[in-house]
Image 1: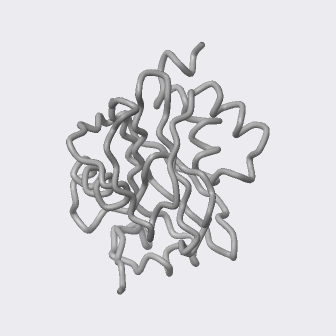
Image 2 (image 1 turned 45 degrees about the vertical axis):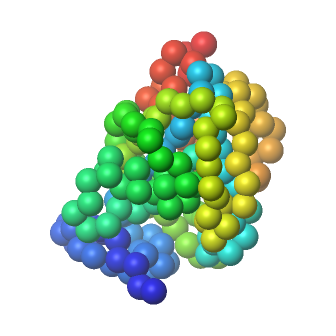
Image 3 (image 1 turned 180 degrees about the horizontal axis):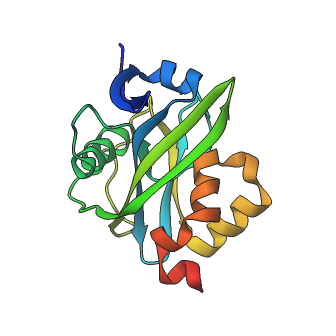
Length: 176
């Protein structure tokens, strides 16, 4: 199945095949969601079948929006497709841009719409095994410590979010 993602080519937003965008390191649109239960963050471990960063821990979910898809709708869609989560209300926290080597010659150069959704730790989930191999709730401060001690266990974007954009995502928690 060919997946086309909104990508900037020569200054124009153009649909480009996802793998091609990553192979060429092209700047493209993305959405990332963090589900929180007070100071705990729901993180996922990416399925081993993913074509980049398999088996690494990442934020609750992330994806590339479909052409002309509203970022908030994309966030809801992906929460359901990856984790079987429904009924949450993602709140837009801002936009960031990053560029990261994700291995095997692939580059993520994303313009990311960031979302936070509040929940409870007993949130019902139905994991899609093609996307997610496991999840866990982790306290924000413990997560920052774990990423610092074991960075290779986490996706590059998760490390970037915690190192450079925690204030946007976690507000008062990040300031403490």
